[in-house]
Image (tube, rainbow, N blue to C red; front, side, top):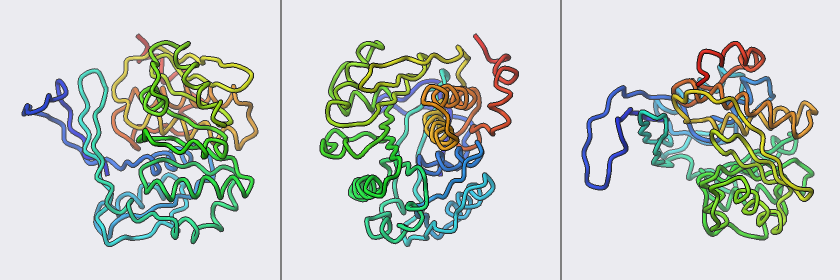
Length: 299
């Protein structure tokens, strides 16, 4: 559950500031991506755990309302995972995650859900559950012939090099790419160079979300930057999750990588002109009406 408060500026260390607009909004990277996949027309099954509390009830209900299969979500004795989010006047955010029940999503749970991910075309993972379970499922899903998409968020500096060869698409944002590689990522050329370092370690494709610059897709044949509409940003929360889900949905529909990135960019752009996490995620109809909906928000 995202607990969101708006601030005029991000507090410095030791500073107390006054916020406004406190809101409780369903979130979580995996849940956001499942929610977006459901709203965008994908056949999504969510694997994860919540607490036996009101937050857990609300999160499961919200996913079900988005068309996501929730029957394999389990209840934990720990409280539901919670994110404390501050959003400034520029729409940028700062997030602290208390994982709670997410910590119980272990290897045993991943194996118990084998029938679910073995029936999938795409297995999409994030880093908000125990990393050992993520790495295990990446390897097992690849062995099973699945398209593996890993959104390395929150990013870890000690990511195992041997795992890259089991990832079809790794999808960091600029900050996460910098953490993974230790390289500068200020320009498209620098982003491409950092992405190339992951390709050399075995990653199939590196798909980097670059905020207002768009998204950069790098493969062994080169790289391309796909631009986005220049809009007035309200809140970037869940924009990356929306992008990941939209890209995955488009791939399962047989679209080319270029078409999938373009579809994902449209979905993510619609997310940043709205407030909140899952409440900002567009529907398939929204994306099809992109030009109409985005026009009032262009700079």
